[in-house]
Length: 117
Image (cartoon, rainbow, N blue to C red; front, side):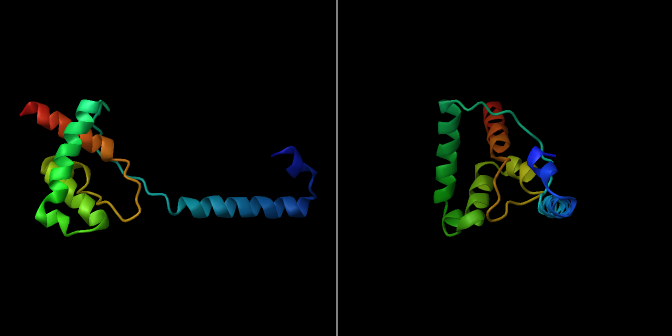
C-alpha cells in the first residue's frame, strides 16, 4: 500500500481496494491467451523486402483485392504461405482490432520455407 493510501480512514481505503480488485479482475476477463508455434525472424532489410514483395503481390490478387479489413489481411497472408498460415493463424483466426502478435512468427516461417525451396 502506498503512504497516501495508508493515511486514509479505513472505509475509503476499503472502497479503494474493492474497486481496484473489481477493475483488475474485470480486465482479466478480456485477456485472451493462446499458443502458436514461434519461428525466429531476423528483421533484416533483405527479409523484409522479400516478405513485402510477396505480400504486395498477394494483396493485388483478385480474390484478396476485393476484401477489406482483417479478411483482406488474412487472405493475403494465406496467399503468401498457405502452410504457415494454416499452422499459425488457422487455429485462432485474426479478429478485427486484434494486435497481431503472430506476424513475426509468420514471417519467420515464410522465410524458413522460402530458403528450403
